[in-house]
Amino acid sequence: MQLSAIDLAIFIAYVAILVTIGYLVSREKTGHEKNTSDYFLAGKGLPWWAVGASLIAANISAEQIIGMSGSGYAIGLAIASYEWMAAITLILVGKYFLPVFVRKGIYTMPQFLEQRYDSRVKVVLAIFWLGVYIFVNLTSVLWLGALAINAIAGVELLFGLLFLGVLSAGYSLYGGLKAVALTDIIQVVLLVFGGLMMSYLALNLIGEQNGGGLLTGFTELTRVAPEKFDMILSRDNPHYMSLPGLSVLLGGMWVVNFAYWGFNQYIIQRALGAKSIAEGQKGIVFAAYLKLLMPIIVVLPGIAAVVLLPQLERPDQAYPQLMNLMPVGFKGLIFAALVAAIVSSLASMTNSISTIFTMDIYARHQPGRSEQHYVRVGRLVALVSLILGMICAQPLLGQFDQAFQYIQEFTGFFTPGITVLFLLGVFWPLATANSALVAAIGSAVLSLLFKFWWPELPFMDRVGVTFLICLALAVLLSLWEHNRASATVRSDNGQMISLAEVNFATGGTFNLAALGVTLILIALYATWW
Image (tube, rainbow, N blue to C red):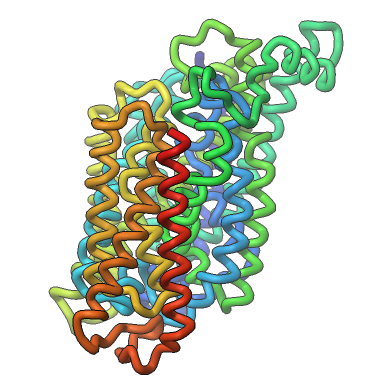
């Protein structure tokens, strides 16, 4: 279905405003050229409202709006566990992790790992994140975005991919994180308003079919599809493998959320660019509040589509097809909100890809170059990553019905090890570089073994079990290395300290308690299954 002239005018106005503001905020004072801090961390001058809005804009993209709406259509409100638990996770990240990262003055998460462990850990994780960001996150956002544009405006998939890539590069490539973060204010306002409008209109359509309005529509929806409002799925639910009951709230979901919100470069980079720790923390709290609204914006429309569009071939068609039911004018607004979410995430991902490659890999082999040289490299890398994403999007994602679940399961191979690395790195001085490598590599190996040898284990439980095993392996290896000799360890401020400088009595008690709790949890998981 084609957009009407009014819808198209609204959308063109949005694109023009976005590019104009992106250009204006990217300009530098006369005589000043962008340095790495300006380009990759917005000069460390972001206020709390920009940090919070940019966190949400980076998070809510095509994979969230289209993917989670599709999961809402297929599974129901239980998929909102990701959103509501993320709000709690954000508060914990702001309180305990952000101050550590900011005080270290880092640009990237791999830099923290190098300071805490060694360069091997940094390089392994930098390469991993580059691969995931380009071939999982970037491709999924581009592909789902192109599908939405195709379904709503009738644009061919190839041209949709090109449009999203060019628009993202057009307003963010030159300005870097500052352009991304400040334009994200517009993106989030449009996203929240457009998403709430979609939910309102969808429920109102259901209500009109039954002689009422919004409240009638919601009541009718709960009557026709009561199973879609179950928050805890039973074992006989066909989607139990995706969201396995209570263990979602008590197990692997926490691992996934901490890895994403606390240790994920393209998310935490916004907080690293804040004016101060306090500003960053306030921004994170603002983002946590906005996360509470997300199920209304991205999940509820998918549930409404169960009544309005019961014969969909694929769940991920729910949101695009709903937009075709919207009245003239509103469709253009909601379409602009959807594209806003897509391009803001693309801009965030490409900026983080360029930051990791430039600061963690390129600068390592080309030290001593000028700041402006590294900025130019960063821009080139961002452009190349977009091109790769557009080339690989269809071959990698074209065959999946629920892209959101695919993304979660794939990244779930690695998130347990990443969470272990950062938790031990921040809270346990005795953790060693070798134990970090074992946790990182063991996470992928164990996840693959469980997937093929224990296929009936839901992936969320697989994440939880893998996390506990990797944690136990890292603790045991660290203790074994220290017991072999009078070893030194690297503390969280990067200094080498000996065992004599650690409160060994307290530390020993903590070691035994942590190891004991870990083993008990592994046993409970095994008993449960």
